[in-house]
Image 1 (cartoon, one colour):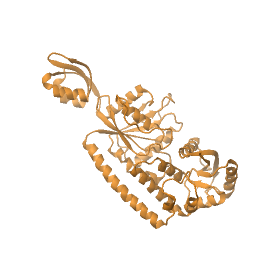
Image 2: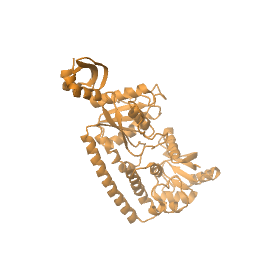
Image 3: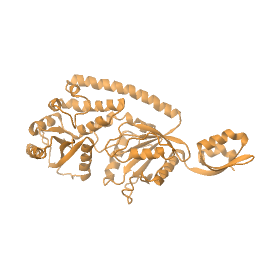
Image 4: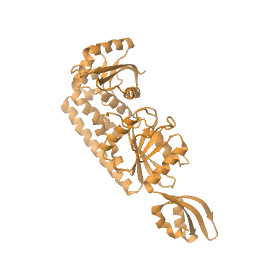
Length: 415
């Protein structure tokens, strides 16, 4: 059974309420297993220091909650510990702010030791200054939204103990980061190119990754998880992808971004996103069917700037064009492509685009090998796209799609 909630959406009077932002909060609540029974929009000139939205509004929402049999109020803003305590005291309801809601989703998605520790670290850092508000909230029986992650007994300890736990988690993560850095170095030595997928959560990155990875395969490989939920992908995953020229690259699917993502979460997952710094190409995936493209672009670009990876080669992929075939490219995004992950021709077009970015332009040349150079012929057949292969009495002739940079290497065989 879904947890019944009321979304309390706060905004200052001098600012416009964005329907997309409200929709995003509803999606977050749904992803956390909640049901939005009502939305209360609160417009104020200033924040009430005790109740954030004011005593009168709290009592009004309390009455609505009783009629709707709602147990939880979810706010679109970050609340202090005293705010949480005072709101719970006056309403008798569980109070969850946006940061706690996202942390809750992350806790339910985390699978690897690294991501579990990263979420736990962010949880402790978030709750450390809010111990007063969380003591009463966490001593209640039951679970639900805002109660996943570190257990009740872990969070009901003093500041000194929590700080010690934070330090211990940081040490564990440092050890994991060191191990992962060694693996990154090994990948760099292997000379295999890396392509990272970034973008707003639910933009279709995982679906697109699956299509790219399996396009030139006879048999499907293990797939990235896909589902229409925010933050479905939390752990960074890597898969080999074959390009049209038969060369391979690694496709890396990363955690999705979101507007006003808590600073502690960005900090916690920075190590996970380090793969971006080692990438040869970044695919910036956008949901072209969204009515809030400007926000998707701004949010992602701000985070990429913070991660200091804007100097990397980048292709902006306007995904889900099947839902919005008339999408108009916003901004001055130089390197862009419009596709649908469910259109094979579009996937092939994107693979050629990736190939071009990684290896430069390819040319189709005619080549001929006598049988004394069988080893070179085998290497060409294995590593390049070859067509019209003809085995003659004295030689083998064929058409080869080869990069300009490698033409010099095989020039003696080109006719």
